[in-house]
Image (cartoon, rainbow, N blue to C red; front, side, top):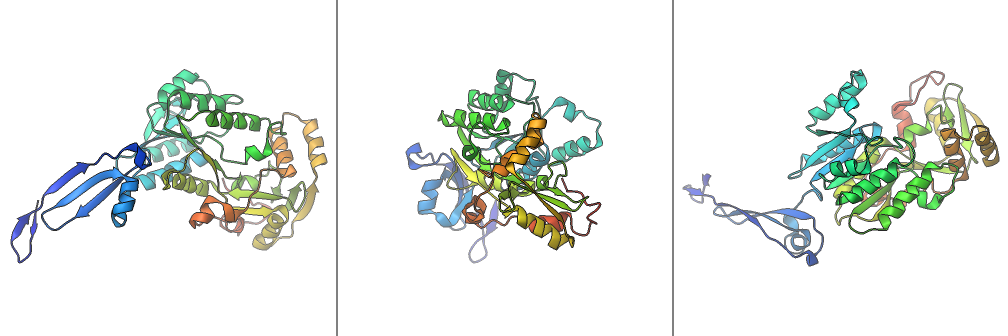
Length: 380
């Protein structure tokens, strides 16, 4: 390589690639790329440990991925959003590889919606890995997960009881460096075991398992309810077809909501955060609102006057007793009891980092505004 030197003559430029190994005692195992330019005769690219660069060359620090090979489990609403966000972030990182685990039937599906998603994943340059979380054994899953540094589970409660424990055990068996389990929801620690929603007990088992070991780093992200779910007619809180809002427990009860897109963005921010986040629960939130504020927002934004009903805890428990296997009725009781389902937005990861998120009112304006209330339907 040649360039114009001082005074006009063409002078050679020496390109040197160096790797400095710094002992682990200096701090995080994450690395940083550092570019140093000292005149036309020398250009060096160093890969050194971050504490070293922060101390001596802070103005030249360019962050790399904490963990270069990433596997996302599932490509539903959240999985697709996480994969898009990861893909955007990876363009600015060195040596990043992103893969997604899909059932063979999904990859080969002739369903137009699934074909569209698979085509998008291929266009993003992601690797498609075949696997079935519900049917494969713990050992078979461990063999797949062991090929990756970081695993992010976006599965939802796929496969029924026991699957979340199986995935967590497989991640530990595989000695995955970093694991983000499917815990994108309420604060299960606060709710505790024995709640109306028995699926939550398994989530607590996963937390206990991860906390009982130190080999695999883990991060749990508590998001509250997905914003779109609050407007699902089947859930029963907001019914736009009848202009009705039903408060779970009381009108002063609060609920934290976050959009799938914000959950994805913030998950990626947590993944790449410096200093590295590990072995802790991270709370995020798009908004925290009372059911009264939900009804007021629908009235104000859609220009309607909703009918307001209060579903008390005893009433919701009575409804659940009539259909004890009804999953939605289980959720209603948990949210009506009001424990572990709402937190202060100002104390969240996104608020402390100054990351903009979508409020409830903004979501309603973007997804429901302009649609006649009698025919409005929730997005997602």
